[in-house]
Length: 297
Image 1 (cartoon, rainbow, N blue to C red):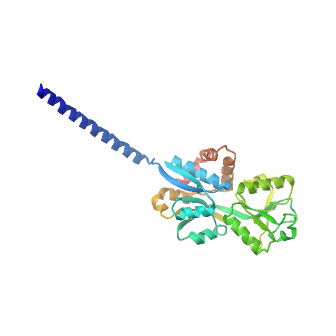
Image 2 (image 1 turned 30 degrees about the vertical axis):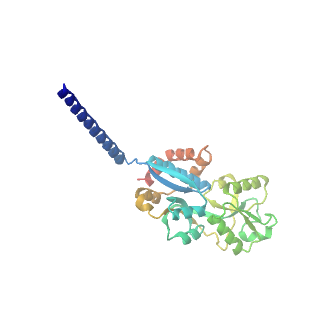
Image 3 (image 1 turned 45 degrees about the horizontal axis):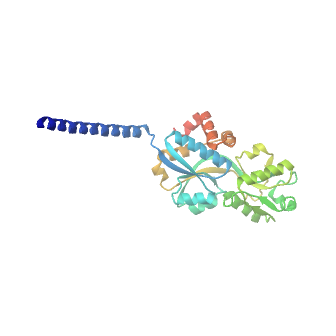
């Protein structure tokens, strides 16, 4: 009887050892399958600024990267905070850097601590002061002082710290304008433009293209004889130091990324007219998968 008990005990130990070995093998195979599939959820933090085109492209990349197995978090920050976060490696990427003029101050300040990509994703950007087209007598920044009473000596602005706001301050100095630049937010500025156009009242504001507002209202850029706002701007991206080494694949995808007027305009329209920005971005990515595949090949 004692020998049978000992035999059963030995068999039980052998069975436990066998099951443990099988379990370890299954875990190893499972880990190997995750590695082989390339679907490991790597976390990425991308800065988002409350500008129409920025919301559109950050959500677009969130959709694209999620499809590739990345867990993407969008951090809503202003431009100054975005740069500091990249410098401190609290962010991985910022997708909208306007050069050579609008964000030149950030390039100068952070060029040694942030990677500013030479690659551009949009090459026909324009920035300047705009007025409604029904203001026939105002066609140049030089005309503003002559009509300052019309505008109550105010330029309606948006986010303080944005590169374009700083260039607008410089334009006030360059043209010796008797105007005050009023900071607010992009949404507040656009609301004021909408109300002014509705009443056919004067308004002047700094704006940029691409932007959906030009398809909704008849606006014109004022001539800039001193070229304070620069000519054609190009939109780049920036990443924290070490990003290319940590995410070589994503880094290459960002460099491959190119959009034209129609593509960015449609993307902004989809995002603006969806209940959630991500829904609009998903729809656009689905309809433009061939283009996206060119970026992430």
